[in-house]
Image 1 (cartoon, each protein chain N blue to C red):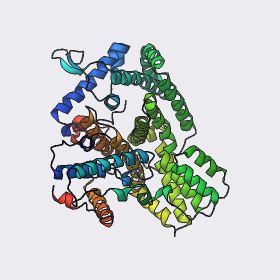
Image 2 (cartoon, rainbow over the protein chains, first blue to last red):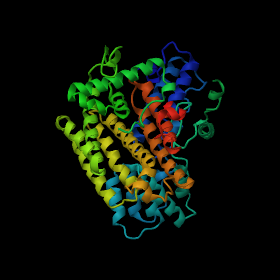
Image 3 (cartoon, rainbow over the protein chains, first blue to last red):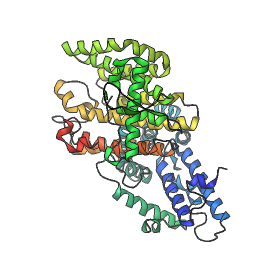
Image 4 (cartoon, each protein chain N blue to C red):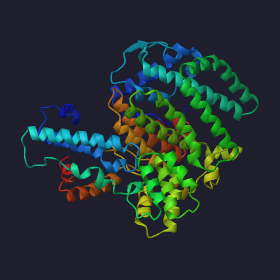
Length: 217
Length: 295
């Protein structure tokens, strides 16, 4: 493993507080929520693993049991978080072909997924949703939105489709340093608070806490 | 090229600003060195960004030089390096195609002007295309595909933007490290989308007046060169998603000497350019608009 201090970008002389802050900043950057249904999700989760291991190694070597060791790390592993939105979710798919297509989408094999979808004659809500997912991964955001909306109109009770639209309407999500701007014509302050409060709720469920770290700045 | 990809000057550190100027001048000198003085006119901010993005972990050597634009006081300028030569080659290739495109699109004396510029750069283009056959091929293929989409009045913004995005994406194809290549591909693809869509918004009023193709005219129902507030929101949400995809990829790239300038460009410069384009001040003369000149 690389030197844990250089992974977190702090000097070995850094105080516990500085280490924790560096860890939290990086964890916020590579948080799985920022790479939701993203073709680079695997790279981000590798980074997340690397910084988790570095933080654990440092806290262990400093023998600081108790306070925050392990951070809000492992709750963010693959399983739990990917349960949100997009084609990652398990569905009660009626058509076995759809399960196969979902697997292809998750494996980033978009060409084959699209070909299989095009071969299906009967276009139900699930079909539109999966086509939207293919477009989303390809980066064709306008088309993805149109397919997601059709899916939701055809089956308004489906939470998965509604979540996809909600995620689209907020324009997705990514890490931004404080003061960063967005393309909607506003600064990120409001959104950041929302995201943090959201992340804090998640963290508290996992036994961590994010909000105090803003308070101390 | 388009110039949307630039840092917000006022938010740069002075050290960063000088470095940025050095890369811009370095690209200009590299163009002249490799392709002769005429190619200097092709220097632009987008490819300055590219040169910084592709740079390795070590800062290049800077020197002080005089040039046509700075004849009296020498300016600091980045010396020849791999990322500058890549950026210079690609500037010439894409620049030449853009001139050829303009020649096709215009008539009369204007067309003659573009054609003359094309002819002057033909040798430079051939040399650059021989250096980067992969990129030159991708540019030719995708611009042809874009042309035929334009001819059939394609109403999909995604499909037309895809062609331009693929051109930028192909810049990453020479990257040896697989993870870095994937990251750069994703970043450049979405950068291409953003540039294409912003350019379409910027040109909308004029294209409507002249009857030229613009994907937004067929995707939405603009009136007098303006999108309805609802359509604008749809379009900007799409841009926001591309920007997030780009930012996600950017966060995964390692640090290099230009990280500060690059992150200014990504997190502040692009949104500021989008804001200027949507509010209609991008095209206006810089001195009349503080918004525009602060970029």
